[in-house]
Amino acid sequence: MKRIHYFVCGIAFFSLASCSSFEMPNNEMVNDTYEITTLVARGDGEISIGNDNNGASISQEHLGAEAGTLTAGEWNDLSNWNFWESLMQKEMFFEYQSYWQFFPTQRYSILIEDKGGLPVADCMVKLLGENQDILWEAKTSNVGVAELWAQPFSEEKNLKNTIVISYNGKEYSLDKPTTYTRGVNNFKLPIRASIPQNNADIMFVVDATGSMEDEIAYLKKELEDVVAQVKINQPDLTLQIGSVFYRDQGDEYITRSTDLSANTDLAIDFINQQSADGGGDYPEAVDAALIEAIDEQKWSKSAKTRIVFLMLDAPPHHDNKSLRKLQKMIRKSAANGIKLIPIASSGIDKDTEFLMRFFALATNGSYVFMTDHSGVGNGHVEPTVGEYKVEYLNELLTRIITQSIQSPGDWVE
Image 1 (tube, helix red, strand yellow):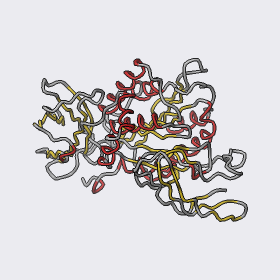
Image 2: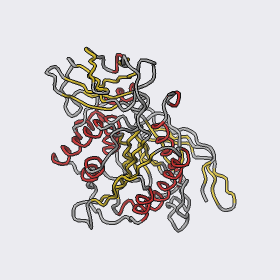
Image 3: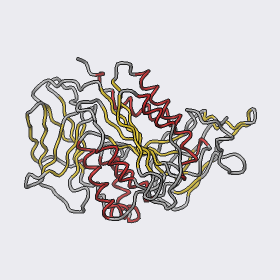
């Protein structure tokens, strides 16, 4: 069975050349299995590595579906803002904004602390325009940070803005906030903040069309392990799990779901009953899936984290109606403190990669992408990102959830 012993960063730094090159890993044959020791990838484009049998993908018949098989990387554009802005200065990447009608450029970041200097989590923050109209709403993360956007669905600029913080029935204003290029806005409440309830809401949204068949059997095991590990590591946490599987118009179903519930076995049983089929054309019903996951669930009013993991290998439909639905759900996700973390599977193209990164930016999330290191599935497009670490998918998702729960000082009471 294939195992990755040492993970070394893949690099897709720019130059931004259309070609790609990579150093092949040092493969040592041990008991008829390859053990990958190192890998460095450079460039931007499709690369397919780590497959045995002269490049053929390892199927379930060759490799039993078990947790700790799929590999992935994570990239956070919010933490690499200069990199992101440099990308958007390139016409070939800026065009993705126009194509999807997402313009995450005018960013306001705010850190809110209480009287004692502790971060204030799950606090509602609004960005108001010159006429006091609401441009964006968000909730602070577990480390007290909220990301706000002025006109993220338009190329228009709105510079005369105000930030309004709502906490325990009181409002506090920050006039003339600075955009992120000039620094993070800091605000200290004149009171001691309370700790959010020890809740975590996690929705797994999965593309269940036929093209996902190569990875979906493994995803089931990975997600089951993620839930188990979070429960073991956070025994006092009230963990709610739900799931949406989706296909497209004309398929057996468009969405099929199980609601958020503290009975995590319900979601795991539901996930294990699903299979991949249908599809055919490239775009799928992503908008319907997000409506089901964000709009139709009873999310906790107070929580340490709320996350939607969106696993897909194809974009949404590109008509105006679908785009408006997506924008509405992204706006609502941010307003309710729900991080949207896409997980790009094999088959993702550059258009879809950048849309997923727009989703993550707007909701204070990050972009996760499968890699070829596991040998499972078809080839994965190398993302246009900087240096990243390759991890097992189950460990990566467990880490993301754990980091979204913990706070500096582990919330000294």
